[in-house]
Length: 616
Image 1 (cartoon, rainbow, N blue to C red):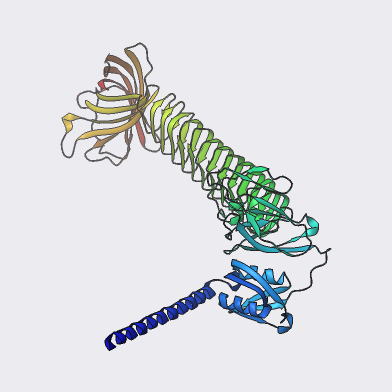
Image 2 (image 1 turned 120 degrees about the horizontal axis):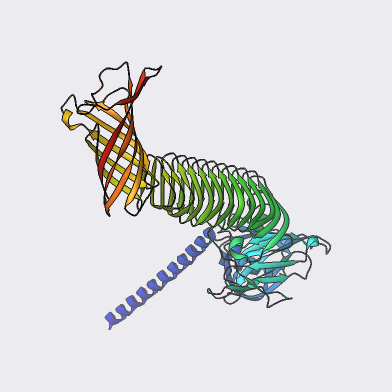
């Protein structure tokens, strides 16, 4: 029997110890929670749940301080020892509880972990013009405080954004406007609150949520509870994450904005929601749009449309359309349609369609069509069907059809059809050209005009490989490329009877020609070629054989023809050089003209002939 008693005593002791340990742990957990809250949450924003009835005010303050994990500091003369308080609040902030107790008669200031209470100044006179409204914005359904909500006065452009705890504080001049506040938050209904009582006020405002898929927001007010406005499509744009830009769908208007930097000016934090007639920005400005003139000594940023003059020392960035004139020392960048003359020291870039004049020191880049005159120190790029004139120091690149001319220092490229001319110092490319290509190298699938250059290749044009013999070189090979109206000739030839390591005589050259059609199977040929005649490896002196050929091209089959005709030859040499090859071995033509010029250049002329076969 004694053993049973001993076991029971031990069990009771163990349970007592366990309960004591749990209680201590709970106390430490609560204390730790309060300590964490005191470090992370401001005193006035800490959550309080308290229920008292007719308790003395000092005792109530002690309970609030204990639950909030802080201490009050105040002069005992401002707290009545006999005043009683009745409260029943759940999950309210310290600020809200104190406002309920003191009704604005006390001011609060945090310092370390102390909340200092002082006597508030007497209520302002009714005729005062400064109004201070503070409080919380909360969800009408859940009662949760809403962070990053916009609270503003449309007439004065005074504004505030609720902090992470949903608290706001806003000042405005009552004499300039009706005392009213607009509250906006993305995915919530716009709400208008009219202030009827004079002076400073503490005001908690409830706003109601709307569906995520809604495209309309309702502006609720006392006068027009059913009025609606279209919600603006928020885009990825500089300062697009600003709360007022995200929240406010209303468009505000002002005659003039004067700013030092974005949001630091006459329109304040609402500058991104205001369209101005005139905007003067010292370093930079930000606005919803400009209707007349915008001047920025460094940069201008507009979310929406701009007209009629926008000038910046460094750059302009426009999210909407622009009309008129746009100038910048470095760049212009626009999202929407551009109907303007653009001037930039470095680049003009348009993501939408452009119509007008573009002049830049480096490049003009248009992500869609661009109609008008484009002039760039380096290059023009257009990504859509366009028309006009493109002039660039280096390159013009056109994606899509183009009606007009391209002029570049190095290359022109058009991926589709071009109705006009391409002129460059080196290379022109287009799919189908109705005009002229002028460059060292030209390429086109089809060409309605004439290509002029060292090598011109037209896919559907004139291509011939020619094997021929004349009175000097019995073995010649040439490639003709271009169109029949005008083609290039690359040629080479050799005298087979003089082939050896040191005395072989050979030639290479270049020429141009035309082949007008006489009948379905007969063409005329007029060629002008110039060939350098070599002896051995290379003759490092003037040895130039020039030929003017006139003959016929008989089209025997689709890709085979025979050519024959006469040549007028002119051979230029230096009288001071003696190691020229002997051109005439088996045939000695009659020299019809010979002349030596003052610079020791000798010219011999004679008649000759050529016969050849052509393929392709």
